Image (cartoon, rainbow, N blue to C red):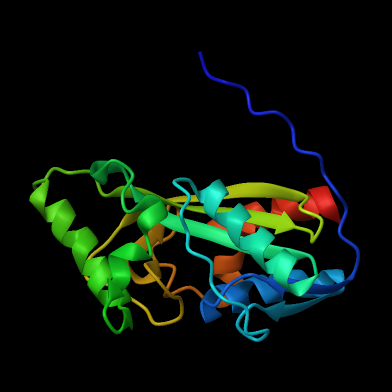
Length: 210
């Protein structure tokens, strides 16, 4: 029997300043553009010199919530955090919540290395392994008093090799969304924004809080 998740208590978000709880410039750029039409003056955690909390959660929701709550507590402002990742069917959902970990090196994140690791893991499964995959994005919106609510979106597609495109970030160059021939990294930003996992989660957030 599947346990039912209780409904969230939704709080409306007023125009004004908000922290994007991320040091990832690609994410910040996408989220800032999505927020702009709603009167939100977005500032990133990096711009405020806020530390990056350790992502100890085992789900996208848990990691998004801890980042949003930490930024809201330290800044005294509402904060929006994104936790997202690539889930590959043939790899049992990996890299999943550990998407960024697959890119870690002693000198920083190397996304070319991460994409190669995914491709190598698929190759080890044999030529008949499914290349279906999906991106997940959880957006958590938190206030300094500890109230938090979250919204989760998905983008379904398949993986291609070698990587193609230079517009996106992360695993975008190997992900082709269903219904398109281009990778996320080949699509203009406005086209990706219309179909991405982040856009899906953001549409839910907008419907609830504005």
